[in-house]
Amino acid sequence: MTDPSPTQGDPMIAPDHDAPRAVLDAAHVGDIQGALGTIRVHEAGHRAGTRARLLALLAIMGPGLIVMVGDNDAGGVSTYAQAGQNYGTSLLWVLLLLIPVLIVNQEMVVRLGAVTGVGHARLINERFGRFWGWFSVGDLFLLNFLTIVTEFIGVSLALGYLGVSKYIAVPLAVLMLVAITATGSFRKWERFMYIFVAANFLVIPLAILAHPNIGDMIHSTVVPGIRGGATSNAILLIVAIVGTTVAPWQLFFQQSNIIDKRITPRWINYERADTVIGAFVVVIGASALIAVTAFGLAPAGPGHFANAGATAHELGHQLGSAAGAMFAIVLLNASLIGAAAVTLSTSYAFGDVFGLKHSLHRGIRDARRFYAIFTGLVVLAGAIVLIPGAPLGVITTAVQALAGVLLPSATVFLLLLCNDREVLGPWVNRPWLNAIAGVIVSILLVLSIILVISTLFPSVNVGQLAIVLFAIMTVAVLAASWWTLYGRGSRPEKPARSEEERRSWTMPPLALLGRPEWSPGRKAGMLALRGYLVIAVLLLVVKAIQLSGG
Image (tube, rainbow, N blue to C red; front, side, top):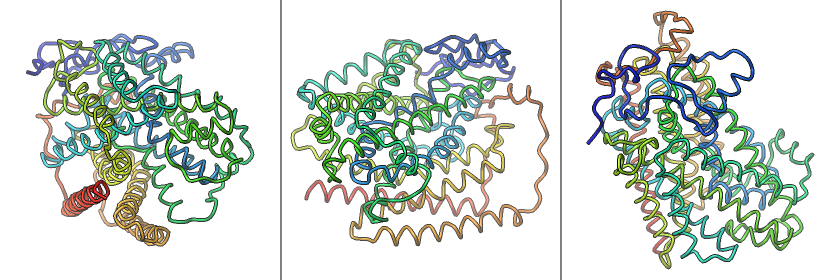
């Protein structure tokens, strides 16, 4: 049973203009009630004075910071620790290059959330058809569920180092996540998330204990290189760093969380700032994790990474028990915030697509199915980790490979939506942003293909494969640029809008929008993408079954 249409006779629904909006859940409109402040629904977006602007930023901050820190989850901690242990600081430059990728991707999500009031999955379903809508929800569910399992693996490893049995640690983590989420107060939930964000900075004193060489870190950040050369293992680890730092669930989570926080176009610039801050926070944290193992484990020499739990023991042996315990706490914190954000992104998507009440402003009695989905996901994921002999290593590998497969398609849909004038009106992408996003999508697609092929065929020469694929990508990007500049002919100029008109423009209800027209080239491209995704996912499933059986 869904809410009555919030656009009928409710003056609170469209504070930014008089037309009805596409908002599905009436709880998604009203005052912005952030962890660090409140903004009234009718308050103007422009604030004069530094103090007033800072207070507005503090009230609005949250979705961008949480989604970024949440991406430094159990898989992220493991990947960064492996990079530092096996390659020292030589891969820090990869993180620097990921900052613009994170900002460009998530800035597009910011506009979609604030302007449309509709979640990412529902927009895909309405604008691209049922196949892609169901595919987006289905692959999000599968990928997110496997990711949640890896988060509970992280919980068991972290608390296992501290002497707590996984049969106690995992159920306690499940109960805590449900209790934090089902408070019926968005503000309380966000404050709990801020505790996790603050705990994320424990990695800084941990890195200091490792006595890092700042000069080496700066050099490795600005001068690309790979210790030991560009071997297949090194390139695969670079792909893993990209995959664990830029994940599909981030798009779904931040867009829905912006809507749930009731952020409208008047406050977009503040949410953009929140996203930029989050991007730098996540890269600083990842760099510190690489430094911890690069310098903390240096006396033992380059080692073979086993898992994050083994890394905690090795740090305890090299730097003392305090360092091992701090690393375990960092891993635990990363696992919990990752599980909270990834599970919530799935619950948001199901609520948005199936018309369920889906807001953290609602209590359990008012949104039973929304919280039931959240609870069911964490309970089932936690139960899998407790099964004796469960193929946890295969699940961890499958998560990285599946994320690599699905990320380019998620970014393609994001780019198409942000060029849909029916959806974003005056907020559509600028040409220069499309150019940057196009290059990003191309790079992600190449990395996705590398990851899939190397997972299915471990003996392939990844270095040569990367050279060939990037050469093909370069030719394709140049051809697409020529077509964009010279092959499409002149297009009618779009009417200019004042800044106030832009700030007050929101997407009308989806039923009132015209269906998007697809050119033959776009249809062919989408069919090719569909074929690649279906074949790649099926091959990965076969590979996972072989690994679990062997």
